[in-house]
Length: 385
DNA sequence: TCTGGGGTCCTAGGACCC
DNA sequence: TCTGGGGTCCTAGGACCC
Image (cartoon, rainbow, N blue to C red; front, top):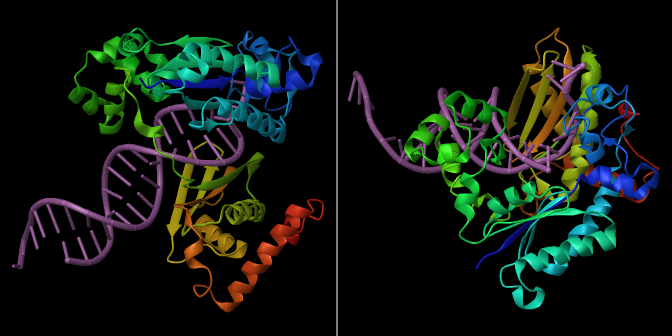
């Protein structure tokens, strides 16, 4: 019988802070920004903070209103990544078949591990105990015969619990849930459920596939039909490399100065180019994103015959897109850029580039290596200093 | 209260070719 | 002279997730 565990670290960033700073334990910790930071949101709130109504994606200003005595922190990603690797390492001791889906959660295929670890529920217990003893963190787990149901089950077990859906019980489990438990149906879908009067998954269960598809579109209709029957969503079943790399920047105040926006674009180019070099991938498609003062967002992209080769090349392509798209006189809240449709770089080094480009590519690679070895050297374009 | 940053996938329409 | 239909590639926008 197939068996999957979905394991999710409880209030991850906030828990790491409470672990490293004992004086924070038992107190409302809010990671994401400190009061006064403009245009920032909560990444993680500890369970103590959630009692005041603070939750992820909430503006820091609002969180401060709800919980003025909370401990506000900007966050230390490096430390969280380190802790995440520790936990994932422990997961790996229970099965080599691990699918990490974000910094703090993973699916474990534990099919056929009974002889080593006992029944699935015992394995889940051992997993939770081991993680707690070795890292000080608690995890919530869900057990089911497929990943989708396991994910929903772990949500029901938070914090620090274990929720088991017995084999054969997937469908009745799903049908008993309210529609807001459907993973993959966000605000827009929830509003539509409300409009049509769908309160529980059982309401959706009773609707024929054809009707679901005509109301919600083919892909999402198919998805809903299967989800409320507790059938596996296939989207995690195959592993694929990264498809895009992107970076963006929100200005503290609306920006009207085009030169300053271009400088921000250059900074983003710097980030993207080094990440591209590290990944050994290449891209022919460059995209630009502009968010205006009223939060309306426009994107532009362009695919060229040749992959992006240097930072200047990327910068030129993005500036061209920017000037084509930008509505003059409007305030810019956010500027972003990305490299899409990534492909392996091996095939196209050398003769594709002009001699002059070849020199620049080598120079950028050297600078990147130096910056990695000596972070304090920080070699960069004069405009970015 | 005024809304981050990094991703994935889907849709619909247009261009172009056969 | 008018016109079908399938396939592929590309673009813009949007929903959703953590």
